[in-house]
Length: 248
Image (cartoon, rainbow, N blue to C red):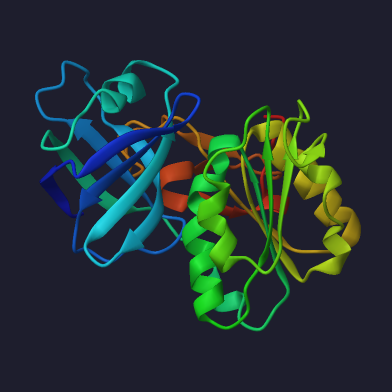
């Protein structure tokens, strides 16, 4: 498991309580994988698991939302500060199954982060995906998706931009051969239900709280429809949507 001390290249706010951090790393990662980040000298016991948003040559980009002490600490870091970067961890999106297929990416809020690198990979494969992104209020980072999406649609619950309403109102899964999804649990549950009704396979990226990142502590377990516990970090974070019990 690669782990290195790296220096922050940039860390800036790109939305309300949403930050983009760029770090150096030459270790190749797959779209959908995540890393564990911990500031050097942090008084907090555990690192924070952050999905990889983008990778360009020797630079990793992470998009994260401030929701607690750990992410608040990350948001206060400046260029030149050091942190422990561990990863890449987990399994990526099943890109080998997407070649030549009509693909839709559905993201909600900070859940858009692990979808950007998938969009780039699909464009490079010659079959750019359509993207539907949903936000409670002001959209953020949508301009990064524009060059790599076949079509980009935005929904905001407040109506400040794009369609006023939910992201699930923007698409019909029957128009696609596979859907990739990440966002709040209620949104992913709704997307999976729509895809199941349409007979369209769907993959989801879970964002459960993690502690070790390697499946040893069992903090991040989720449940499938057979009642079996699955480790989000080790068995995921990418799962077939139909397998996950979102009500557990």
